[in-house]
View (cartoon, each protein chain N blue to C red):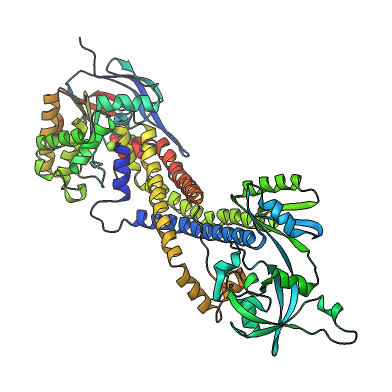
Length: 227
Length: 408
Ligand SMILES: Nc1ncnc2c1ncn2[C@@H]1O[C@H](COP(=O)(O)OP(=O)(O)O)[C@@H](O)[C@H]1O
Ligand SMILES: [Mg+2]
């Protein structure tokens, strides 16, 4: 059996505030096989975003183990983690999070440049190809402020896939979109991920989107279980 | 171009906006600070250089004096002129006298010189008339002194030297000598222009009853730089016992030191402006870091290391510092190019004429560009503005990148 792209066990996370401790993850176990698409649902405030942050190494768990590929990463330092993240993971956020001062192709190229994969010119050329693959070839030089929500999310998707990640972490990517553009984004996301052989961990509220994934999990009471 | 620089440039100078407010105002602030610093330094250098030049012109590169008057100055001059480092050696004598013309009188500081001396500095400052006619019946006056006496070239003045009193007949007032003004001198150095009078050394000795003596010798060196003058003076002093040789750097040393000290103090005072500008850059970048906390999270999600995230903001401080310094250089040049007009405006604003000249001893604004000052100003400015960017940048790098995921 091939190495899972992501594995965690007993993952715990609590937020501390003056008013007390708020446990959000209470021992999450998860294994994602290569190329597999998994949907996570759960009520608002259940801790879905927290889970993605901890799995993506953006936040540190209080306890438990985290493995990317075959490597245990929960104890790695910021720079080490950042380097591995650039090559392994792609993120898509609910509100796109594009750099407002960069146009579409520069936003996509930024991911390539940050990962150190290529020089400026090659990165921009690759960005043009990626934008064409999400149907935005004609909008490459538009600033995010001049794009619609669906277009922004497609730019963000192109950015997330730029480094050919082995895992795409998507946090309610259609949460800000109307049904039609949400469906379009979803088609692209799952289609391109499959094309590239990337696994997907999709947080969503939409039953129909969840239904398109290979597996469906629910986060409830700080634990991840079957629906 | 590294991506951090590209992103920093885009954040500082957003595309399609005509005036990048934050960058523009910050660069202007730094530019003004650098310019005020450099204008002051360059003018202070000018004053310093000008004073050094005046000191060398009035006293010589090295001045030779004895414990008393020098008995056989011409012989000593001849001996000194034989030294390879010495270009010329001229005896001189000087002293105050009373000058009068009609109802006006003033104290003149008279100096006896050899009119044929080709190195005579006064030659460079003849504003009217000529020094060629300077003979026993004539005198050259500083322009301010001539003005006090209401005389011009061709007019006559009366002069009393202190020694005249002892030669006057008992019970009778000494008679003045009458001298014709042959030249007016304008050095721009008020202290000199308001007092100086030149007569031939021969005539001075006669009026002051000095016989063949002189007060000292003025030496011009082939290499008049400070270290060379000091070395020559020491060497000559060893070779001529009984005569003291003072290099120009030792004359009015306290005064030159005071100028240097004042210059250093002004550097730091003026640098406060740049420092204040740097603080405002720092606070603007701090708020930018907060405003951009989501973008910082995204950079982290893309795999940017904390150090690269920090450098995006630190580079902005550096860019502002660099561009501000260049702007400061340009402003410095512009202000200094228009300095006479600015001076005239200040004079017109405060009183009627030559206020600055009276206060600062100069009728003009001397300049001396010192590359070292520019380098130092640039280095200090880049240092503080980069630090101003670096502090919020490090803070940005330490923040958790999770903000990007938290959707408002
Ligand atoms: N940085 C934080 N500090 C304190 N509490 C937080 C923080 N982030 C999230 N929380 C809390 O943790 C819980 C889970 O949040 P989140 O992971 O965003 O849930 P979801 O994405 O499922 O809606 C919520 O109650 C939220 O208020
Ligand atoms: Mg959420």
